[in-house]
Image 1 (cartoon, rainbow, N blue to C red):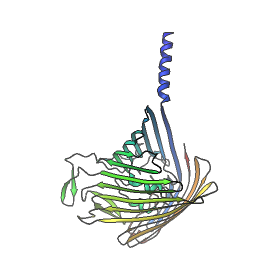
Image 2: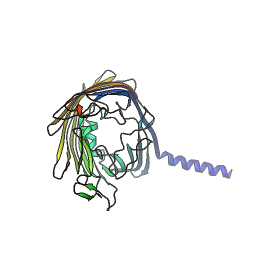
Image 3: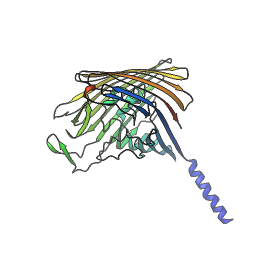
Image 4: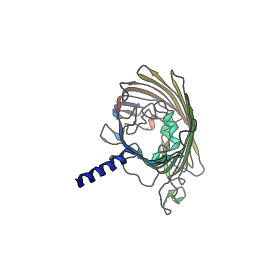
Length: 383
């Protein structure tokens, strides 16, 4: 009897603790056929995440009382076509990066404390300066239809940053919202690398500072964002206008907006991605981009259309994208997307998908000033 009473007391205490907490398993599986043609060649096959990024995640919240809550969020990128962790989200702002292939929580890995003051979040997460590229892209920064300015983001912190401390405004500010992030590069004070002038100190490489502020009320949503990542001159590399170049600091300033007319939502973006010290000290270049898209509900689905363009000096690329998503249920949909990219002034952008783990495109100098086409059809389900 005594043992039974003790067991009942333990179960009761456990039940009380569990009543104050919640843990959720969630995920998305998205696979389809993709075909991308450039002047250099064609690539086709099964590719993931054209409609929504494939993922597996766990999240939980504990009520601490007094309006406070602690939470965690672990989210891993998946490539369902091979069953491995996706290789498209390992770009990092710290000195070493875990190789893709195994399952890693590279999409998001955070712990949070929230209350009436807002939310304080620590770990690996999206950077504030990325959100406008996703929220105001009619294709959600996925597929062959994605806004062209997504493809010219910094490889280090264009989408996510590790070692970050973020703050989010509370959600009761009459439609105003905002966030800010400071991310450490996690490097030693003695770290050096080879720059334009030989060995340079790189202890600040990968340090990110950014913020995003916006307003949403009824049919309107508008937001501006800024992010800067520190790199010693000549110690970071990226590909611009089809050419691999070294550079220093990277700054991203962008604006996004949408208006829902009921029959259709119109979305747009403006962006300026600045790379300092391109190939040599004092040579700064900016990739300027813009987009205009439409998302129109039609029956059980949505018709998508978008135009986007980018410009770097005389190099210009533009893209027309069209798509249709048919919702079989709240969790499952079939879709089709087609895009065509044009280039001039030496540009060589392709119609490759922006989705994590996608097939990519056949590259080469022959693609300069040429067009590229891509399309995908697939099935997406979530849980």
